[in-house]
Amino acid sequence: MMFYSLNNTEEKSNFKEAIFNSLASDGGLYFPERINKLSLDFLNNISNYNNYEIGYEVMKKFVDKSMNSSDLADIIQKTLNFDFKLYEVEKNIFSFELFHGPTLAFKDVGANFLANCLEYYSEEKILNILVATSGDTGAAVANSFYNKKNINVYVLFPKNKISDYQERQITSRGNNIYPIEIEGNFDDCQSLVKRAFKDKNLRTQIRISSANSINIGRWLPQSIYYFILLKELSKININNKINISVPSGNFGNICAGLIAMKMGLNVNNFIAATNINDTIPRYLKTGNYKIKKTIRTISNAMDVSDPNNFPRIEHIFDNNFQALKNKMYAEKVNEEETKNQIKKTYCNSKYVLDPHGAVGLVGLRRCNLKNEIGIFLETAHPIKFRDSITEILNVNIDDPLKLTNESDSHKIALKNNYSDLIEFIKQSQ
Ligand SMILES: *Cc1c(COP(=O)(O)O)cnc(C)c1O
Image (cartoon, rainbow, N blue to C red):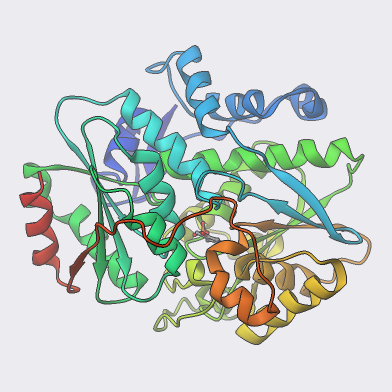
C-alpha cells in the first residue's frame, strides 16, 4: 500500500516513509491510495475474533511487506492491551469507553502503534518527534515513546490550558521526553510544529516527525476500535444501523471512523460534536470555512479552530459537499449544555461523563434518533478533568492510575517563538 499526498496524488510514499515523514514533501497530508474493504465473512462473524485479531485484520490493509506478519501482530498486541467497554447509559444510547489505556484517553491506541512502528524501523540517526497537544496526546505520546531507542520527543503544550492531571502525565517522565510549556494556546503550539515541518533548512540538519494525528501511524489505527464496537454490539444482538457521535477537535478520530465505514462498517450517520470552537458546524451550515480565535472550554482537547484532518474528510467524500453533509452531521455544544448533560446523566444513571463524552452525548441526542441506536465515544476518563467534574457534580472520582502530586516536573518553559524552540531542540540533540 502506498500513501499519496492530498496536494498531489502522484507524490507517493510507502508506509515506513509516510510515518517517518508525517507530511508529504509538498506539505500535504498523506492518504492511503486505496481503502480496501474487509471481507463480509469477517464482518458478519466479528464476534468470533478477539481484539488483537480485529486490529491485525484492519492494519494489514495498510502496512506493507516491509513489516512481516508476526511483527505486525506483535505491535498490535502492544497497541491494544487494554479493554474497550460498551455501557448503555440510557435506552438505545451507549457510551463506548476508549479510556481504559495507560493514560486514560483514546490516544493511547494511536500513540502506542506509532511508537512501536517507529522503534521497529528505527535507525542510528536520532529521530525527533514534535507534537502539539491540548493535553491527552502529550500524555499518550510521553508514555508510548518513553525510553524508545534513538527517539527524542518534544511535547508542546499551552501554558495554563491543560488540566493539572494532564500536565503531571506529560512532565513526570524525563529522559528522552521533553515537555515544553508554550506561552500561548493550542493553535500556537500547532503552528510552531507545522512551521518546523515546513522548515527545509532545519530538516537538512535534524530528522523530525510528528505524533499528531497528521501522522498516518497515529491516525489510521484509530479505525480499529470502530470494529471492536461492531463486535461489542453484535454480542448484545444489535445488528441495526447505528449512529456514532464523535467528540471532535482535530477531526482525526471521526475521520478514522469514516475510514472504517469505507472498509465496510455499516453506519447510518456520523455526528461530529464540537464545543463552542465550531468551525466545522458553521462550515457545514454556511459553506464558508472561517476560522475564529480559539476559546478555552472544559473540553479542552477540542479547543481547536482549524482542524488538521478536515481535508482528509473532504477527500473521503471526493470533495462533494452535499455527500459529506448527508453522512456527517456536525453539532456545536456549548458549555452550559455540556455541564447540564454531565449532571443529568449522573442523576439518572450514576454514570460520570467526562466533558468530551458529554459533548458527544448532547450532539447525539440532538440528532433525533427515534428508535435508532446511538453510540457516543467516551474519549477520556473523567479523572483527567477532575476539577471540572467535582465542581459540576460535587462527587469524588477514583483515580485508576493513582497518580501522585509530588511527581518531578521536567517542564521547560518557552515563549511562543519559533527560533527559541529550534534552538532548544538543537542543543538537546
Ligand atoms: C484528542 C481528543 C479529542 C478530539 O479528537 P480529534 O481526533 O482531535 O478530533 C476528543 N476527546 C478527547 C478526550 C481527546 O483527548
